[in-house]
Image (cartoon, rainbow, N blue to C red):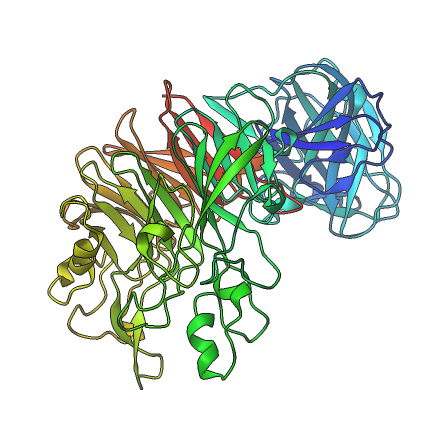
Length: 631
C-alpha cells in the first residue's frame, strides 16, 4: 500500500507498507522490479534532483554546455553527459537506487553509467576538462522516445554523501535527455534512493508534509487553530487536519458531515447531486476551523453558481438549486473521532434586499476566510463580493418559509464595485469580482481586495455596524474608499473602457503592526498602502520569480516582514524593511520549488510562530505544506 510522499532538498519520500509495488514519488507510476515488503517493514523512497548536470561535445572541445536544457550521449559525433547528486541528510539503510532520465528521442544502444570524481563544475566543464570514468555501474538497452530510462545505481550510492555519474556512449546511435534546466519540470533528472527506516530531515527551519502524512495532491489552503492543529483545504478530496502531537493528517468529506450546499426556504437540502471542493480554510478557536467551498460547475453553456438564480427565470425555467445553493462555508469542530459541522448559507432571503425581492444568491466561491476573535466574526472573501458570519453560530434555525440574518448567521454582501463600459462600448456593466484579499485590523475594520477595487471596510470604526460600513464602501460619496491600487487611466466618476482599465487582480492582503497593508496581485507584484489606502511602495521584478506574480501574502509577527508566494512556482519572497529575501531554488526542495503557492498563513498558537505555506500540486506532482519556524 503506497502511503505517499514527503520531501526535502528535492526529495519525495514514498512510504510503502505491506504487500504491493512501490510507487515512485512525483511521477504517478510504478517502479519496475521493486519487490513487496513484509507487513512490519517500511521503506522511504527519496527522489533527489541533481545539484549539477552538463554535457560536453568533442566537436566543441573547449565549450561549456552546462546551462543547456538537454543532455546528449553519442559515439559519433562524441557527446558525453554528467550529473551530480547530494545525499547528505538521508538516514536509514540504502536498499536501492535508480538513476532516471527522460529521453526525447530513441536509440538502439542506450548509454552506460559510470562513476566519476566530484570536482567538475556545471558552469565550466568542457570536453577537454571532463572527469574520467571510474567504475562501470549499469547500462541501458534500447531506449524509446518520450519515455523514462532507468539504471540501477545502488552500488554507487552506498555509503556516499555525494555521487557523480557520467553517461558514456555504447554506440553511434545517440540519444537526448532532458536536463535539470528543462522547462518541463516533470521530466527533469531524478535519483530515487530507497532506504529502510529513517526520518525526514529538515532544512533551514523548514519542515514539509506531503502524501506520506496523508495529504492529497491538491493543497489549496493551510491554517492553524488556537490549539495548534493544522488544517488543510484539499479541494475535491475534502478537508484535512493534523492534530497537534500527531504525525498523520485525518481526512473529512461529506460522509463525515461537511456541507458544501445551503438550505431551501423550507429548511430542506437542495435537490440534485452535491459537489465538494474545499478551497479555503481559516483556523478559529482550539479545535475549530472555518472552511470555504467552491460552487458546483454547471453543465456546458449554462449559468454559473453566481448567475443561475437570476438568469434562469429570464429563460423561463426554474433555477437549478444544486448550482445556486452550492458552495458557501462551514464551521467545523473536532469532536472525538469525528467532526461537528455548522453551515453558513451565504445568501439573503425574500424581501431582505429591496432590489431583489425574490432573495439574493450571488456568493458561492469562498476564496479567503479571516477569523476575528475580538469581534467574534468570520469574514468571507468571495466571488462578486464579501460577507460576514457569526463565528459562534450554532446552526441554521430559520423557521420554514422565513428568513432573517440572525437565524441564518450571516450578513451579505458588499463590494467596492464600479461601473465600466462593456467590450463593445454599447452598455454599462458592474465591475466586481474575486475578493482574495481579506485582512482584519486591530480595531475590527477589514481590508478587502478584489480584481477591480479594494476597500477598508470600516466595521470597527462604525461601532461594528455592518450596514453602515457598507455605505462607506458602496455609497456614491465614498469613492475614495473604492481604492484603485494600480490606477486605471481614469477614475470615478468617469466610466472606464476596457482599454483604460488596469485591473488590480488582488491575490491577498496583510495588515502590518503600523496599520499599513501589503497588497499582493496575481499579475502586478506587491504594493504597500498606508492606513487610508495611499500607495507607498511597489515591488515586482525584485521578487523571487522576477515578474511579480504574487498569489498570497502574510504578515510575520516575528519581525514585521511580509511573505509573498509566487503563483506559477519558484518559491517565496520576504520583504523585511528595505531588503527582499528570496526563498527559491537554493532554499526550497525541488519537489516544491516549482509548485504554485496557493496560501500563506501564520500560526500564532504558541512560540515559535509558524509560517504555513500551501504548495499546490497535481495528480502526477503532489502538493505539500511547508512549515517555517526559522528566524
